[in-house]
Amino acid sequence: RNQVFHPRCPPAMRVFAALASAATAATGDWAHICKLFDSQFDNYDQLEDLKCGAQWGGCVNETHIPMHSIFSRVDNRANLTGVLQGDGCVLYVQQFSDQQPTNVYRQKLYVIRPDLSMDILGFVNTTAVLGAWRHPELLDGIAAPAVYNIKGCGLHWRWDAAANMFKGQTGDSCHYTLDGKNYTIYDDNTLSDSFITIHEQWHPPRPDTNKVLADRLYRWRQAEPQFYKGFVYVVDPDNTTAGVVASNVTLVNDGQIHRMEVGNTAWFMELAVCHYGSDHTGAEVLKLAAYREGHHQAVAYAWGQPGAPSLGLTYRDPTGTVVLVQGEFKLTGESPVAQEEVALV
Image (cartoon, rainbow, N blue to C red; front, side, top):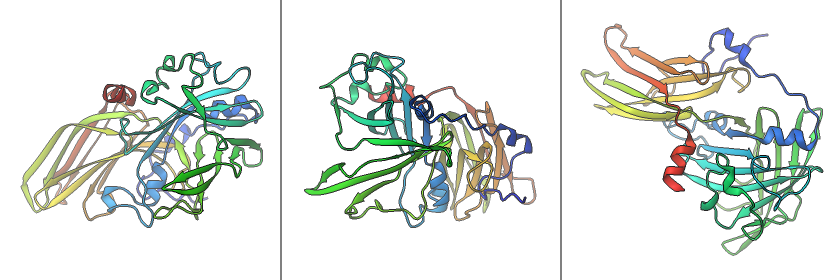
């Protein structure tokens, strides 16, 4: 069968295909869903499909920003009998945007019970528990009134054996008032061993948003952010004596882009973990790509295994004598948590 490759994530060596993770055995019970939820996810694939990156000039038709979700099981690492007793699990949820762990926009507790019902709890003081996925002791002994149940907005999950995934829905009792207008919010979500979909619909639709049924349901892939630090050197193709270098550039491996201007030209350097196939399936590779502004295809690529200690590329002019773009990045070992706590906790 012919394999079609992603135009912005070129085929890596065939050996990378062996890195594809095997599906986990499914039982469909609460322990299974808790295990699948205990992960991190981002919307990189959606941003790629809609060409939302700066090198393409922004999203096509829809407006989206990079978002990252952390779901971390904490009931086995802290005393949470104030919110759950007996079987089930508790997940601490922390979500951030724009590839900046300090841009936290949502913190919640998800309480999953043996019947696969899931309550959503809010925090009275979100700052006090920021970073609890790394420091679960911040949640030790928490109970009402420090947390409150967002009544009517929980989900009930079920195991779909044919689809090999969990499917979760809200009822018609999740109500929200915004700017004096009442809305009913419906969630229709899925969770597998490699992705999650979060399909939220508002009725009536919110003005100036796309909170309506989408033609395509985008998957949020499993992804753990890693930070790379390095340098970027760029040259003006129209005046090769003019060059600019930037050192100590930090990029996250979720498609973060660094833009540099030289003369009348701008260059972009992107670092991302992307899928091997065109449909965002198969093995993943770590990609470093260089783009010239106004040209939607990368001029140069380098790729390696996700988590590689370093990655670099060099792009020369047609004569091969002048380096136009060069960059090298090394895994720093820094985590989003460390940066997040310094900034906000």
